[in-house]
Image (cartoon, rainbow over all chains, first blue to last red; front, side):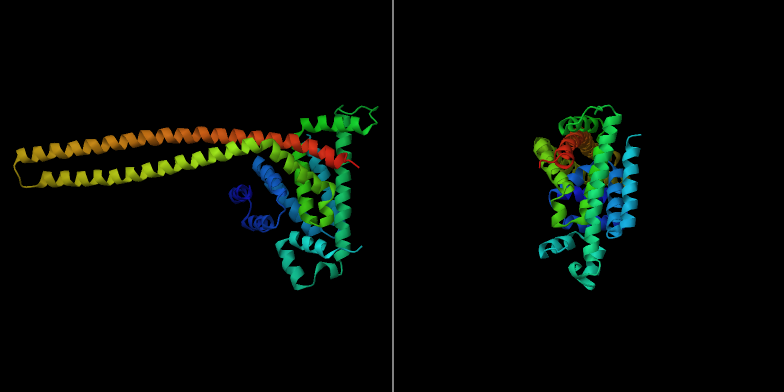
Length: 84
Length: 253
């Protein structure tokens, strides 16, 4: 499964920097998370971009309540948009 | 708030690559000035996020008529939200994206016990048990595709060798034509070499037909593989919705 996930990321349209980001993360990821990511990434290129963007944003905002609040607002909007 | 050594080690393990280096250079997270604050902010965010999604789902399930105003029991709400999610796999996928990214941000032992982490962990298990047969077939198809691809490569190699022989025959034909021998000898040698040329061309045509058949087989197997992946995708969404309701929205106390 881990190899399939790596392959999906390799073939994705992500930048080299973002591919590297996942490469590092996958190494230390709990195994239960692998199938979740694999299926999310496999189902659409948009999901790959979205999860990458959200994860990076959250890591950068960790410890900053204001930034985290903005992310929360963005997620709420995303959920609302998904229904349109 | 005090964190165990194990917690901190796990947290470090999940930190971003850049951050790992930074932490190593500066000081361990438990002694960092804002270490605890950061941890609390992340936990607070995780709770708020969970609440935001719960509120969103309840509200939208009501709007969609899946939960009526009279539904007060958790079981009734649960059923309504489940029906709502079953009709909106895009929402499940989005919730998965949100939870995965939050789990990656936090990555602590405490976070592992939160609803989010339980959600994706249980989703993974449920998905694995629902799809193992499909996965087995998927892998089998993958192996078959690899074998056929390998056979095509072998045939292309054989074709390459025949092509070389054909070039050699053409060169020999020119040589016969230019040789200072009588016409009868030339005709006889030409007939022999043309027979050889026809045999090579026949073999090449057979190889082309075989390659065409094998390429069709690969196409069929790729369709089959794609169907299985789609089926798994559907199963995952179906199971994730259920797991989300059971573990995050209405966890067993």
